[in-house]
Length: 404
Figure 1: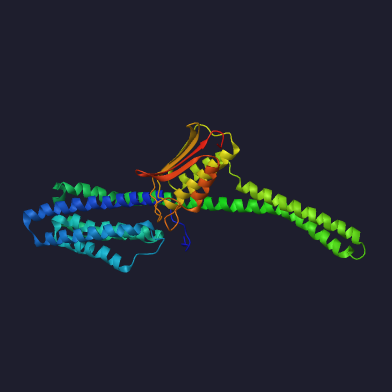
Figure 2 (figure 1 turned 90 degrees about the vertical axis):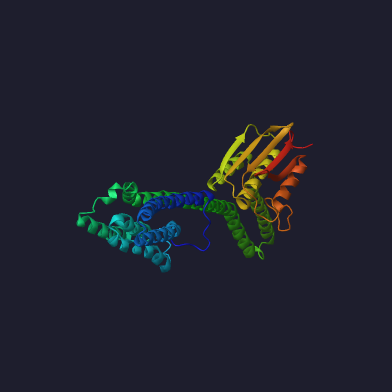
């Protein structure tokens, strides 16, 4: 996929999933490397061989470069290859360990395995069509010193007596499956994230098309009639001035009707329905990666109160999306203190200069909350928006009748 310059950032849940995936892969390589290095250290302490010490250093260097190389797995070859220097750093210590496998028959499997570990990692980063060819080549080269050792016969079974060897062999065989399956699950999550973005963009596009169609229906007929009558007036103005004046009056009436219908259309778009706003808030916050709980026990009967509460839900949702990294949110509405209370809580942290959602650069509350506070005060209600411990809370209360 070609990255667009205006591409949207992924949802928070997608980044969290990648962190878990990366962590599991890094842990897998660390586990293998610790098994190998620990076994080699025991051998070195017993023999104090310089070659074993060199192999330990090569294994540590190979482990460090593999862990860093894991960060390139996110694109899986789609974003291009890493810089050549990183690939050289990945294979250089592994090749040094592989060479030592020929002169250290008692550690041949551990030494040769370093090339296999690095080769598996590199095969994930290359283009997918080359993955299995690269992995097969890495396997063949890895087996050369082991096959040489087995053909010698005399020391062929020494490694079987070591406790770490069976685990390293088993994990080495399963390594490609475990890494590829982890990245496959991550790829599914990423595709779902892209589908969410596309669904949101499609919904906006459909709404624009619907509005364009409604506007065409409202204005198209009226403008066509006005154009025809204006042309008729132009033709009859000199010969039939009274008739032309009558047509001008009809043009005025049609234009007024068109204006009123347009205002009705716009008013319909601006109208806020409380139930729809509550459901939309839950859906939008859930899509953004924040688990949203909706708790509504009762709603007010007053049309004006419902409208203000709808605006409050919309404003709170917008501020959560813009100014926080929330992973959970709760929207509750119900009777309280002789009226109705709306409480919106999220665990995100405001990142704007004012320290509160919708704040302006000078630290004062922004126009969104200021406008909402004015609507609430007209109905005799109260509004507060502030951090509460590790969460941010918007609390709105309206009297029973909608005004006092």
